[in-house]
Image 1 (cartoon, rainbow, N blue to C red):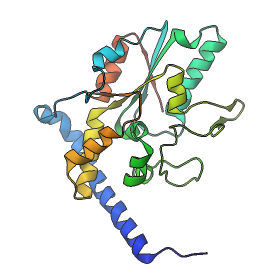
Image 2 (image 1 turned 45 degrees about the vertical axis):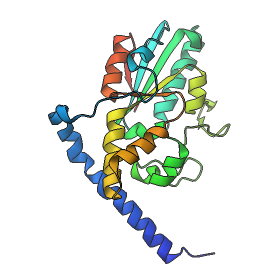
Image 3 (image 1 turned 45 degrees about the horizontal axis):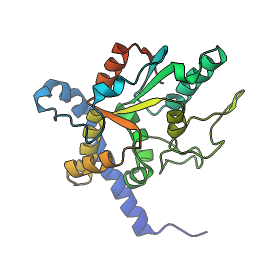
Length: 233
């Protein structure tokens, strides 16, 4: 069995230490941000739809918003599927349901592509294990998972990949404020330019996921469009 290269291991520890240093500043930033609203960066859709127009897609008879604030195992993705399946079992087809999932706070990495997970070690930073390896994930576990990768006792295989849920009409959005704060904290810990890291993260948002001015803004808009609130934890 080959041993780890000491130099490689040292660099990896330095990298993770830098991420931890940057992330540690989030506690104060999270509390201070509401006190300095004039400093909040102006929101730009970056070529995506206008956020308010995006919510006009909500037209189903039954409407719900799942608020995902933390990477709580499979729950942010299992609950939307359970909602659709049980509606189907009681006579309401998918097209008559509107389901919105808001990814905010510590759930934002789920909105980002695999390359960013590997580069920034999101699995270690946000404490998300890969269901295949049981180690900190270097990929987005819920983007195009393998068939049969997720199973629920008593139910069997469940299609809870983000792409699979999107195929069933589930709408996903992500918090711009959280992307700004976390990318800036990571940039600080790695001695990188915050604007460049944020730009890279924005470019790595998964297809079909809409950026919102903030996650709480999105939660409010969803409820204004008739969605009942469910905490996805």
